[in-house]
Amino acid sequence: LRAVNFVCYAPEAKHVSLIGDFNEWHPNTHPMKRQPDGAWVVQVLLCHGHHHYLFYVDGKERLDPRAQGIVRNEKNERVSLIAIS
Image 1 (cartoon, rainbow, N blue to C red):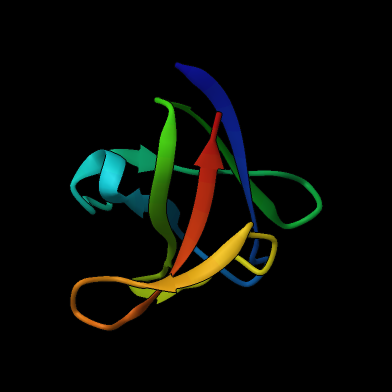
Image 2 (tube, rainbow, N blue to C red):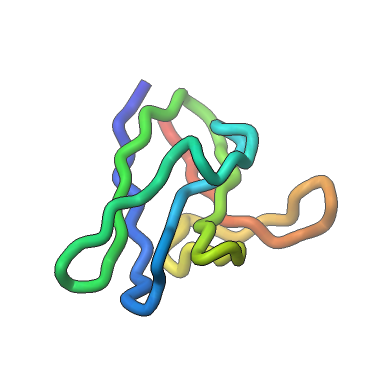
């Protein structure tokens, strides 16, 4: 397992969480913590391999502009990609 820091810049948001294949896309599993500069952060332990994820900002899914890539999931929706080695 590797600790990975996720950062979402959303100064206008009231609530942000991380959703992905590592938490069954549940918005309550990894709530993010607001920083003074308007960024939201969370650290998650991820196992080796490729993971799909999105930020969940005030109830809306958002791609990570700093993701390693953008891929399509099984529903042909765009999701962010991170590779852990």
